[in-house]
Amino acid sequence: MPVPVPRQREITAEASGQAVVHTATTTAGATVATGTATATATATATATATATPHSSPLTLLLIEDDPAGGLTVPEILDSDGHRIRLRTARNLVEAERLLTPDVHCILLDLSLPETSPRAAATATAVDQLAILRQVLRLAPRHAVLVLTSEADAERAAEAVRVGAQDFLFRDELDGRLLSRAIRYAVERKRADIAQYKLAESKLRAQENARLERGLLPTPLLEGSDLRFAARYRPGRSRALLGGDFYDAVRTPDGTVHAMIGDVCGHGPDEAALGVELRIAWRALTLAGLCGDDLLATLQEVLEVERPCEEIFATLCTVDISPDGRHAGLCLAGHPAPLVSRPGRPARLLPYENSGPALGLLPRARWPRRQVELGGTWSLMLYTDGLIEGRIGEGKERLGQDGMVEMINRHLGRGLSGEGLLEASVTEARRLAGGELTDDVAVVLLSRTET
Image (cartoon, rainbow, N blue to C red; front, side):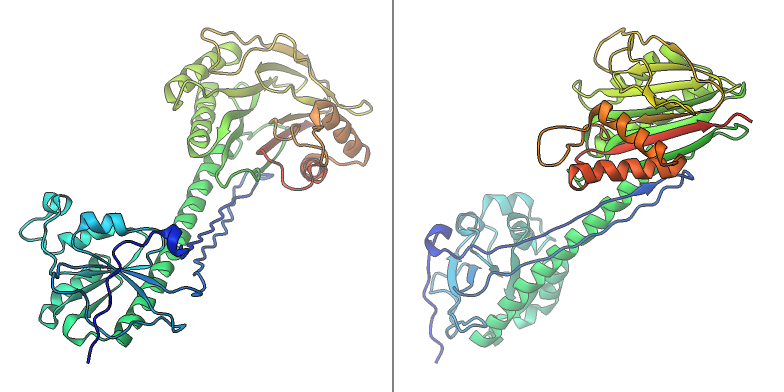
């Protein structure tokens, strides 16, 4: 003969010590190598759901309106032979109070009247599953079973389509069936959450790839005798992209313009702002703007597009004359480029008379400095992720002096172009003991006089 299962009205998570653990781990990264200015994105995503070992029983929250005595079935056991604990609630207000973290599954009686204010506010005459929808909103990470009569099979199937893990018929219910249904519902919910995390991670990786294509474009240098190489490596401190960006174009008069920039912060907003600034720089450059006029206009773009007033961007622009022997340099709070010539050690270009980062000071000015390059040279532009990496376990950073020493060492080995950039980024990572904490973007323009 069936034995009524005792009611347990209130058992807190602290008292029971049965808090269920849901673990979801996602990683999404993207790596771009743009020596030929093509962007490739690699995304790896993993999602796992870890179940708590059943050293203590599962907990079921029953939501039903039965003054006579609750769910009458034989003793309910889990897969380890432990008795499944039962809590009961007569309405959603009471269910919300009893829905502590140690609850593993909810069993909802679809015949429950719509007595709660929350349910009544949203239920309509045609929506017979309003209570279920309220439960799913109340407990989005919990497994949900619905209980109904066999004559109401169509509504039971619709409940599963709405979001319940399974349905049970009241007339056929027994302890073994309910125990199996609870275990199945819990594991299916965990699998659904893991699948959702995986899909979310893949979408994030796709968004990163699209942002990368905007941040790291194909340079427009047709007709120029300059060689172009670039490297970008995302930092380890976050899954999303930062705001490093670069570009290079040749205008109809034969001048080659190049830039590199960095929006402060990390994440999709900063990356999107970096894309906007890069595109604006290219458009303004092709329209004939240069130096202070160009940077002043870019600051206006940043001030309109940035999500908050604290966001700023550093920028370095160079315009190389058609004969390749001279360049104009503008710095907006950005590290000075490094120039190397045959027979001489590489050195930093002068940083004096530079202007502030974009977005810091209204009506700021950015002086344009003339630089003599000579016949054969290489000019390296970089973001601060390269020089701010730590050296070993201590607090010392590579810095600009350390970077110059490193570049000269690689130049002494005969490295140039993409090989020089790859060796430099690799050594910076090695000195830091692994991946750098910030994004690194490096651009190298080279010319050989014939």
